[in-house]
Length: 104
Image (cartoon, rainbow, N blue to C red; front, side):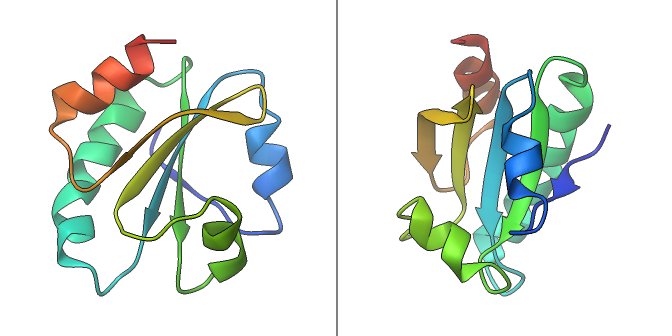
């Protein structure tokens, strides 16, 4: 399963999922975000059924970025039961993202 696009219209539905949700805050002009995108997709596919992975374009959804205090991108926030439980800023190695998920 690939990462889903999250907007303010589907945000509540996505984070109220029974499974944890990993959210990638990004923008199309962000070079580190572009370099990190394949890692996010791989993590989404390899953790399908265990963790939902979503992407929020901060240019299109500035309210959601502000709600989570996103100041730099890419930012990953891991949500469980509708609440943030872990986060990281900057492009990360796939192993680091997986460790964040495995820590649940």
